[in-house]
Length: 258
Image (cartoon, rainbow, N blue to C red; front, top):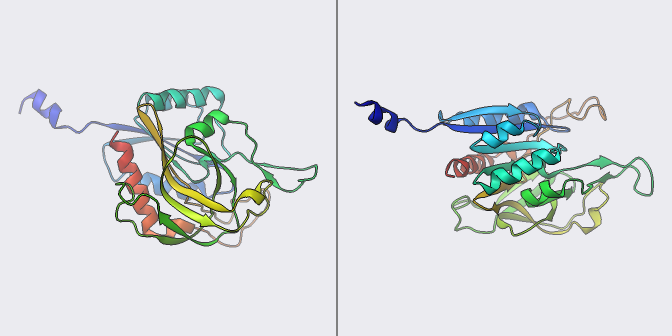
């Protein structure tokens, strides 16, 4: 075998950046589960960060996966993400990636959570911003576009998870959705929450795109500190469902098909 033939037979390396960090979630669990899924393909080599500020790593990445809560990129990082997507990057954003949260300590909404619009570029890139969620109870997820490969063959399913009420931005290709009749609890904008909300969607950006999945809440005993020293249960929500791992694997496959 010639050197050229041997090189041609070698599958190309895929450089991945995984950003997993923030508050009120079991980031250790989510990080490990996502790394195990990425490791199913030996071509994927992953660098892991807790925020978006290693802009050189993002700019050099082939694919990007994020599982964060209340982690807002600097304007420089948002601009790097914008340019990276426009050049063909693919980003799989999970659960609380679109959240900016502040607990109000004064005024008429004291004690409620607000979703300030402090990162409009980020939310435009993602296609949505988290506004609120009702109590964590079972709800049904239905298929909005059964012909799309990312959800082909997926049947409607029930999950016990955070049902995200979203402010959406731009043209979204919705793949999964849910109906909500309950307002959020403890949020400033909860009153406007009931209706149909995307659960899984694609937003295109030039040659690139963002794939967003709102499912995937997880919380362990210590994850509400300093607000609460001990949470009595270990919550895995959609992570307990085989269909959730199917959606994660399909999304990772979509990333690699760029």
